[in-house]
Image (cartoon, rainbow, N blue to C red; front, side):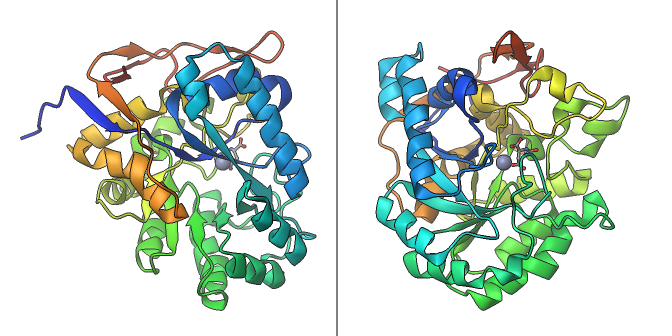
Length: 355
Ligand code: NCD
Ligand code: ZN
């Protein structure tokens, strides 16, 4: 018999995977992120990408400038803490990892296989050839965040994550047994079970869209471009397994929205961009997913504790209150110069709101 929770007071959450983009985009994305989260791990797939510690420091400054200019509560400004990530390329050196560590600003390094997703053209072409960098990261305790998909054109898009586990990730883990790794935005039962089979230094983030939706939502009754993200939504059995592990209370699995802003016209397009925008209402989306399996009591650890634990950071002191009060997700937000940004579940009503 489902419990009827009406109010949930939880430790303030962090987002361990978000895309804020740069320059004018920050005027929209930074206030949305700061309203929802304390710490956010800012993905480095800008054009050009954030490849060095100096670039990461400068990017963080631009984010903080946008925060200062944002029309939001001063308390939200004070608690927002963007953490930076370097984009691994074929040319990243072990020395760069040492300066990243010394800076105290860089939290992790992101591996995008070249061509895997939005703005990944500068990604790594020979992943297993990056041993010296992985060695340095292992030594300095810098986690490797992986976009886990192979990119060969002959591999079916629905099989790309599984093939990455078998052919690439298992080899990295074997060769660098103490390297902390986050399997970002996992989408399959295979990835969930692979993660479970590893030591505690291998974790995974899970997005709201992969908990709430499957490929039928994307494709049945017409193509729905706002459900298109990478890795692509999989079949319902995978969605079910992700919900199971997210709500299992296992600290390996934690919140990473992968909220990624793409102007509406670039998604509603003959060659639409990949990415779902969820930052403003992410907590209500996760609450909806957890409630669907009667596991709201597991939300706090997933959203607000396990990520910090994995990164070896303190848990936030503040709390937020989720209440059972309907909220209508806007059709869009103003974005860039006269453009729009359509959020995930635009125009639909969610049962939960953050007070
Ligand atoms: C992300 C983006 O738009 O930057 N898109 C996506 O579909 N998830 C990139 C990524 O995380 O793969
Ligand atoms: Zn992402």
